[in-house]
Amino acid sequence: MTRSTTESRPLLALPITDDDRRIARYSAAAIALTIAEAALPSPLPGVKPGLANIIVLLVLLRHGWRDALWVGLLRVVAGSLLLGQFLAPGFFLALAGAVASLATLFFARHLPRRWFGAVSLSLLAAFAHIGGQIVLARLWLVPHDGVFYLLPVFATAALIFGTINGLVVARLFAVSPAPSFYQAGNES
Image (cartoon, rainbow, N blue to C red; front, side, top):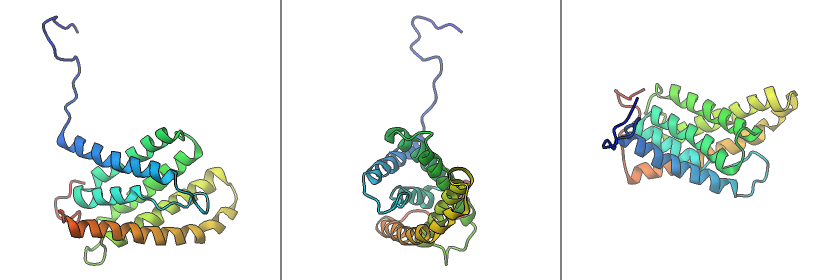
């Protein structure tokens, strides 16, 4: 394939859509929160507030599951690259938690809106996140059932931080309402 000297078009051009720009903005915010959270001291390794999950849940409720999937996965990959943890055990734990959380939110689309709002979805995602991490830790990092003794501590953290993050998202929606992810015609 040749190119004329007067032609200024690149050989391969991928169109950038408004959806791409929106996902990039939300992903940048989630990555920034991931990096800020990494600087916070933690009472126990692995116990973090999950601030970036606020962005993922917000994207889910405003724009649908597909966009939330992109933001969630981009946050894990780019955040680990920026923190120098890509392909380290922490990356795989974060990825397992994110995948479990996003899978739970995928199925949560079918729950009745009357009983499942931002807080309850945040709690479901937080417990799924911890569950995914514990399962991976048991299968790969700590091949002993003793890892399950940490479950009450992590479940308590998921309850506290999942509730707080859900309340933040609910408050953001009270300030700026958006279409619901429960509406018919959700793209995924």
